[in-house]
Length: 583
Image (cartoon, rainbow, N blue to C red; front, side, top):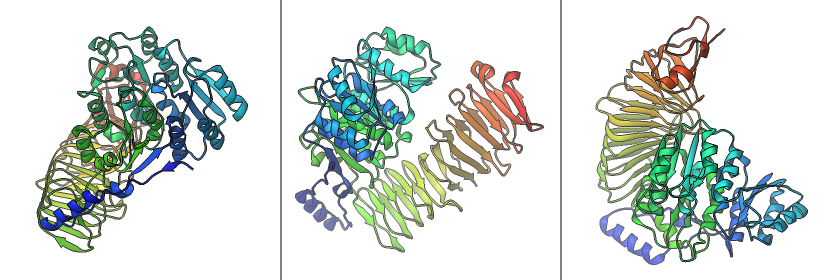
């Protein structure tokens, strides 16, 4: 049985917090992480990796084996683990670790990938795996860590995105590993000032739309950035800052039900191991790996307050000597005020984060100096200023009405799928972030001003008045169904797979399609103007009415469109042989 331990409550901290709450008149609740934080660990890195595997996999046909004595070869293994539905296990270089062997047997593994050459994982270990488990073994290796990263990348097919990270340190690649796994993007290792020949050849044989450079110029120079297609650098002031920036940049790809915390600094340079094994589980759970030192820094704390939920399960990777209980507790969300009485009105300011955990709660005339988390149905928020974000998770049968509300951002996670789930009247926010899995409706009314609407899930946007601002349908691994209703005139930018519908002939704005190559976009309904900027694959229905224009050379040469015979769609600029008509 894997070891997964509840973190103990720190009594002295609790007493101080409760006394402070009594003096301030608040109903104080302990940080949710005090009850939901856990730890995956073992007596050493090998047992820890086996326990991480047991926590995530009941069985698996595949497993990935890497050396526990060096990080280089296995840094890029997380995407391969995701597409193979495999854990990452560690072994000694010259001896098959017993914990690893036991886990291979428990999983009933049939296929094993060994990453790295025989200096990393010996031929003797390879033969023992074959003999003792009956699994077939494939070794992925190059003459060095850079070529090995290419051998792993080649297992991922023909991607159109790449991640480039330093092969001279482990932190940046590990920060990128979970999102690389989620999006099936290869991680290619490089020297700091020179792109290896193997990487150049690999990249030249692909059609890459985006290359993410992880880390600052000291890790990957600008000369390398200039060599790769459409390079975009993601970095912070140090490894922990870079970790924060990576999680922020790909926040729409994470679900944040879980967050894994691992040590990434120390005296011996071997702290990579727990995060390496954890990256496979994080990819499977669509969760980030948060890298930390012995003490939590301010940037990481601010990240957790911005993106985590009270229900986010914060899980430490490795023992207490690596990641302390106190650090795990501190990284979670602390709730100062819990609105927990059903069908009740609340007033009065809140000096921190607030949580609605009961049905039919009504908040009126208050200021909240933190985030507001709404985790029950049928709430009403009126005349409220929130210094942080409002998170709406009303459930599939729930609604939430906001009136005269100002907040930094509004994040919608769930709501009723058959009626006006979320209504916003005279609401001011920088971002409306839609992270839903099932369809819901967000209706905005007079006075509502949203600067940017970011869509990563299914949603119906209805504009009765006000503005959604610039609407972006983000490039995530999932298809999005988006309906545009009401008097909708805001520009919509389509960056990823989507079904875009305008069922009530009401859309009068502009659609910009900027997806990656061959990414499919369905247009269903009436659209005045559709501009195409990429080699996308557009499909229309018999009810589609639109003018579709290819704007740049990529779209003119490579965009494709499929039209029902006799449809009312005008196509301009797309090559004739890329236009298909069918019955």
